[in-house]
Length: 254
Image (cartoon, rainbow, N blue to C red; front, side, top):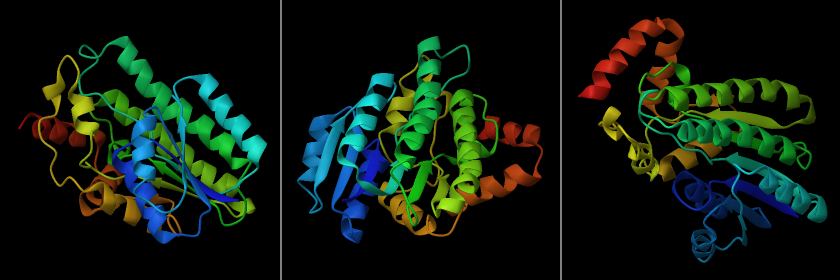
């Protein structure tokens, strides 16, 4: 049985990936992982490829065990894993609660790694892993500090993993887009100082990012999926981070 696994599957970019995979075809099932089962069931009614909703909270270690046991029981051939689960919170260290900070690190870092390493045992030559990072990974971002740091971790993890699994014929791509028009913004603003970032220039549709990311995953180690994120990537390589942070500080307050 050939399947795809998509985390963060109930809305936003995760749902856009599922719709795109359905259009491309070639899968026996898509396994969607998210906390909101009803949303995944509704999404399953929109597509033709069977969608299996797994209502799991990836911040809980027992959820990873459930996934591990399901994979061991059914022994599917995982053609593609898309780690789209993640969230961010706007605010400085003084604005965020310790729980908000821990949850970002837990979901964006620990859960992404444990899901990946659980699924890799069921992948073979030609399989792909897509890690949803962010253009925030390319530089430190005051007022968005912890989120940017978690995505930098995921970017470096994904790039090194690509080399480690290359002998098995598996490709890993870190997808690093800029702003995407999803629920992410409203969740990020639900903090003590949600106006730390006020505007989201050049925001893309999730469908556009999903389409470009799936194409890029055949070739690239890192995909930005848009010109704004590409500029950030180049700037992060050649400009001093103190200069980038100064520009960011000005832009986020406009």
